[in-house]
Length: 268
Image (cartoon, rainbow, N blue to C red; front, top):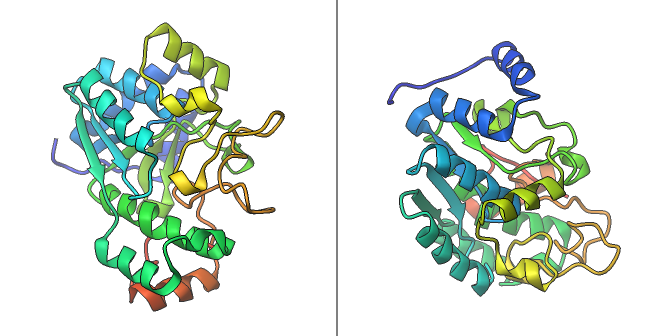
């Protein structure tokens, strides 16, 4: 398939209503059939993403899978990438990277561990290392499939299984696990012998960059291990929950040059 497949808000709203009570596999099958080679599973290889990857690979063994290597991932994640590729030898596995010049400019101005100093600097690091590489990858797609669930965080409570992603030029965003619980995700992984990230066994419940992720403490929320030093800040990197402000846009423009935030803006 080479032609673009697009929908307007009314059309996608009707499709979302139709698919809302469908199983994840049915939603994924709809996406694969509708968008052909212009849809990809986008995952950081966490539990939800691995469930989606496995479901998609059973439907289409050579499904496109995109993951972002920020350059700051735990060594366990790199080892797990190799394990995933060995387990699913037919998948079209694409590892994307941040722009070297953007990273150099960021580090030159703010240092390697800028994210510990303030929320805006942390979000700027996420923007350069994670958000912008993904934006570039999505430019060649008509749809992307994610592992988002409504119960994960307040900012995700209203996601639909199929929706237009107006933050990425109106392509379709597919969230097959939107109404699943954490228990359902792990039940699927166990029932189907899906590989899982080794850091879960060490108390991690959300896995990102190495310096920004830790195991949670008893009684903490599942995303408490992300950017744990921040108080009252959104537990988002900007990929799924852009937060607009002029402050970040000005800073990004100064560092990266014109057009740095034209696709995706985040702030504190």
